[in-house]
Image 1: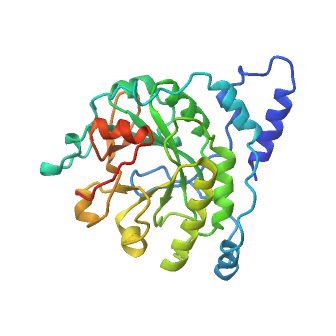
Image 2: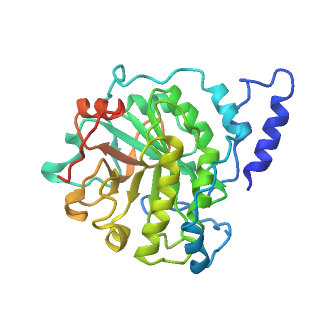
Length: 328
């Protein structure tokens, strides 16, 4: 895995005098991810080849016993040194009213996301350098940050975004873009190696969707899709102690997820209609309502999201209180 060279360099660095918390975030970035989600058009770029495993072989691997979790990498230990400020408690967290704009506004009628209280964003390398404090002032109360995809790709901006979003006061979580030509357990291990387990972080996210621009052209059966997701999510829940959030889009949901994973929180992409129209009877926790958002602090467009509940429900959810998502 490519994190090995990063870990070696970090270990060597940590062994030198004076190389402690002064290590820069830019020093621990890894190979860029070439993923293209369905929400924002990304620059054309070749997708690195990844190991392809036959479905029969993969299926036998997925049902095998879960191996021991990998130890945190030196890069993550360095992140722990950099993150000196304690996370803001849910009781002290101030919800900022959103002031986002949209390059392609949609009239959602009486179910407009603007009527909900807690807005946020999701980002990846394509947003480049972000002024996080300004973005926070514009109404980004939370952020889901692209971390990994497949079994060997790390978003080069993840570490920087992870630390800077925290320092600006946003509630942060990390997401993994699932690659259908890679064993699920390998992908889970890769995510765990690269995403810190820290107090106050939002649950990890598995991003499952069909991506026509991916180098992986396979569309596994519904049965295998569900099996792979279960392996990945159970591995993450065992490590982070939080049930993962499932992010998906309408076409993938229709093919695979209707009626499934009722005990998991969902983050639904629905940029042209309310989720109740695209995902009937599905309870949801987060709604990605725009892929063309505009905000000070970010050059270009950014995904906009909203929490399905009131400020009080948001604080209760952050504190670990049981919150029952709704389908309306």
